[in-house]
Length: 490
Image (cartoon, rainbow, N blue to C red; front, side, top):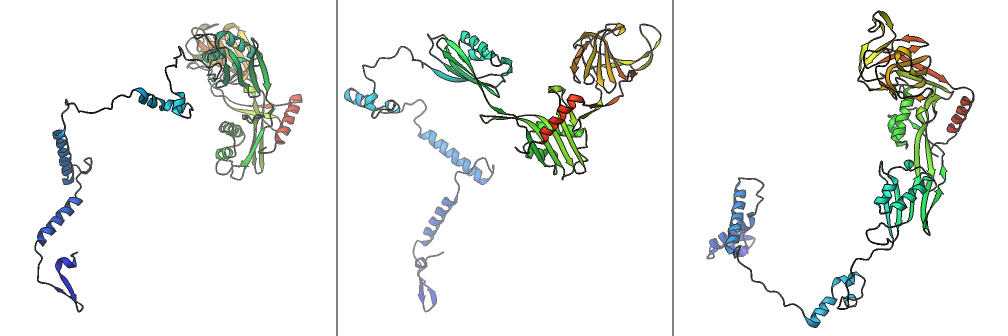
């Protein structure tokens, strides 16, 4: 845009008239303005990491080189000293006034710096004073020793032994779970280098028990503080929807309990094929609610499924690892395959064979599994030990009874790990591979009987049914009625 004054434009009668008079020096002024505008538009310090090799990049590199060159030319040199000036040190009253204004007294609560300032009457302590009592927390680690945890926290060995013995009267030290926090109060120690005496300790020994240890006179006294526990189970119900697992988890069931619930149902229905979105799942868990507010969930007790025209009701019955699932009528069923009892290779199968020691054809009623000497032998199926000892050509021999007419035998063991009458679970170690009895080398003779008749153990599948009766059935039905009486979500 040109200014009207620059071009001497006059207005007159609605028409603009350009004067023929030209101002002197106008081209030079325009050229100067153009240079100023160009200098303002040019980016003298572009990003040297972008558009490498372009005109802008070279211009930026030239700018950087020029600045570095100017800095080096204007510098006094690396070995030249720079002359500076420092104020003279304070002395006399000026020093005392400045000293009184330091920030340390103010940080310690003084109204003015003068009140807590150090002077010539201040005497330095020979050693830092200790607190008479300290409070701290120690955590019991996995596989940790209770007494060792106390000693690491600073408790004397004598007090640690006395405390551990006192706590043993309330709870077994092995039952104290890893991660338990010990709240400790330690008193004044007689001298540096010696441990502090224990004045008090408190910790949660069990979900339902607090333990206090306090020093009374010269003695450490243990006190138990029971915690009231409500053992009402937790019942959860809901629709299966698009996913049984997700629906149960969304309803508040723990992941482990949902997995157990699905495995229990899988023995009666096909979870992947038979379930419908409109079916209702029903599960009940062990639950402990402490008076202090904590909640602890346990094993799955009841697994139910309302499948429209069919209703599945399974109840956990038994103690610990021996618990099994029974329907509401007290009938339990087990299906599956027997597992291999030892890791090895089959050296002789079931059937007629030439005996390597007796040197004639003889029926081989089991199969031989070659394995290194001392290899662990596992129970092929849960059952009860009917015999464990020496048995003629079998050598060291174990016989298990599984129910439903099934029994299994394990021969030529080097050592037996179970006793007659005990209950074993599938996969539990019952002995070790050896070469006792009529044997040419370390191996396991594995034999299986159905109703007293030897059968080939490699291809058998089993289906056993157990029916509760008598007092056990009565107790079972009472438990079923109690579980079904629990209201969902309560």
